[in-house]
Length: 450
Image (cartoon, rainbow, N blue to C red; front, side):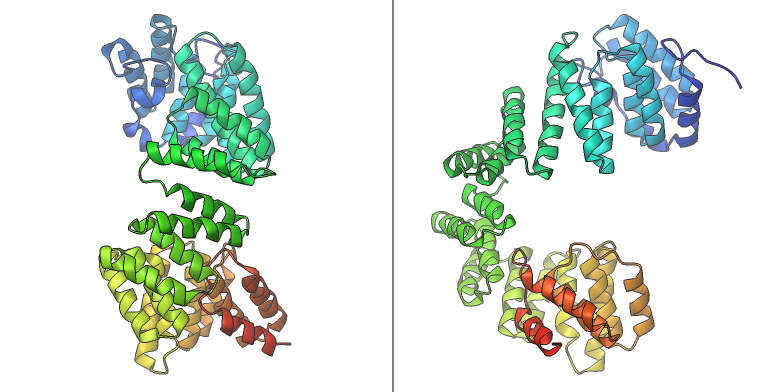
């Protein structure tokens, strides 16, 4: 086997092998801006033509040629990242995951004080779900970043990426003080980042004790920077609802509705909150009023169908769902709801229609557990038990909504798995974060199994 030097000059044999094994055709979409835009201004100018040539060589599987042109570019423009970093980013952008780490190993030798290899590794670790590794890598990147003075533009990019990543990990671990600290550092670097203001607002409602006034101010700033973000009170309500604090959340939802009744997003959020609490009679006029001003809102028609179902008016629900689909033909939940409405019919043709809608929903959302369970139930009801079981055997039971859980419990009962059905129903009835259309039916079914 040919041997190549492992440091500056040429790629190591391990790197080349990884590149050739995994090189994908995605490089056609890679640009100078994506590769070096965090390091220099006007990255697409002729000054950086060697970088463009390196990308082209990489696309032709000429790994050594790409390395050579990165070397030339770096010698002409010292502000560029280390060569091994550019190679690693090129692999990352091309989707060649196996080649990233060997290239970064080269970089640790080439430029041991550069923070970016640790940032790239941290980001890859987060994507892979390796939180402990990601946390340590971000900490290492921050330590190096504090001493890094080679390129102010790169340093700012490092800070934004590092504090964003550390915030996500802190949120995942419910370390709100750490999240607040990192978010404030992030906002020092990027004060117009609406997502950071939004995250800070959420954290202010999650710290103990909550600092609601600061949270609302952060939500207001986020809304000012990005008008598409929720009303500040809706953001507060959703944050509290996510923690099971339904009574406090409702105060903010109702407050938002009082202040911005004509805002479609506010009406949706308030009506959803009411339906989660089973207050369909209060939600109905909110939905009706919003539809009067937003007749082509698929989201409102879908919510109207949910309210119809909770009243037991399946014919009205069917019409509202057909209207929803006419407005949003790829909205999976509308097909799922329609299948659940129609499958209760005693008419065989209507049951077949339900199966068709369930199959469409599953095609639109093939990884959705709820969509697959609805399809399995409609198959059962159409006498296709074997096909239904085949679907369930492949399914990962994650993120089930309560009504899908009810259908799963019915399937388990059909197969004499009573204990499993009890567990599924009990979990569904404890869920206060999602709308449960058939809560009463689930309660009665669970009682009947005792």
